[in-house]
Length: 143
Image 1 (cartoon, one colour):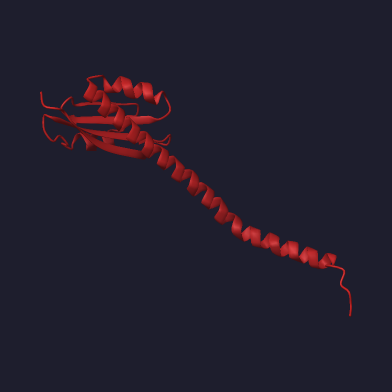
Image 2 (image 1 turned 90 degrees about the horizontal axis):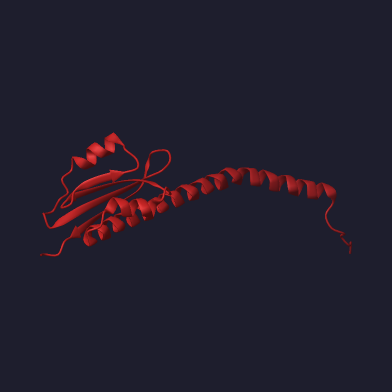
């Protein structure tokens, strides 16, 4: 029986070359996956910010406070937003003005009655694209 002492240098170089070729084929896929994860995290964060903004506006309207002040305190420059309130206590405030979106949203009558308000909150990314949106309705107690 012949004893083997391991792999030769040639075999190791060939194995490393095959491994390098395989990694070159996989790298674009891994790179794209990283970009997709980054984009998904930005969209999810935008959704959470829009939900949070809508809830702050809703709570401010129910308590009789100024929703714009509450949202500005909450946002503190962390994100750009637009908020529309339809129906009772109708108003609009934003850090980003987009005439196309503004015209589209204000052209829609979302008021249910004088006893309710509809809130539309939109969060924008740095590039000016919408990354999060939330819609809520406030029903006011009868007086």
